[in-house]
Image (cartoon, rainbow, N blue to C red; front, side):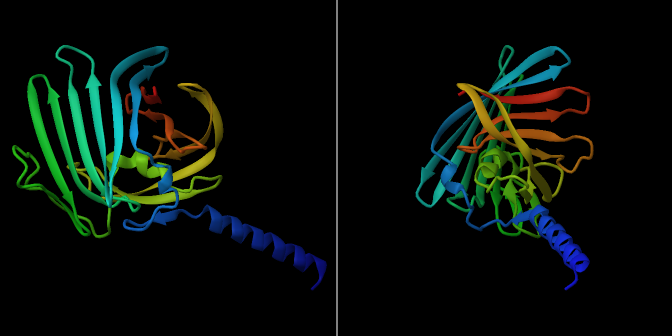
Length: 249
């Protein structure tokens, strides 16, 4: 083969290899997750605050607790807000171990003297309300899901179990329980590496981005390379502020 043709072929093969590597990998519900072993039992707390120029306004302390029980595991979340009385939100979610397939999800919100209860069951083709849950305001929900969907309110732990690496992209079908939007696919991209400050010093991180299917609103996540635990998230808001979640412990 003449040299010019060999050169052209080499460039073409490299371009094809790069394109194949850059193509998003679909994360199917029910499939074993490559780095599920990185998800550990225990609790982590985050400070959530709004940044508006030089002004930083605290919102709440957000605690996420993972607990394993054989073939299932749970994630308990609690937000303790500011003010008197302080608002509280509590989420309890259950999943199949290793695959992260969602099973049930409850949300209790207490704000301004009002208590709202929401409960959901995930099936292969739909998400429905839990009719037996007392005071469930979502008992009549019946949201179709043509393909299996993950629970959007457990996205941080799910991302922790993926094979994050330079150039990796994941396409994930998510549904926010009780939200107005139907399940949809979202793309998360590893766009580089950065070292940022964590609770105990500098942390070497994968930098992951997504636009949540909203062009121009790119959220950034920093996941520690060693553990893939989320250290920080920055999400732009429609009013120009930035919602920041930063790991405390």
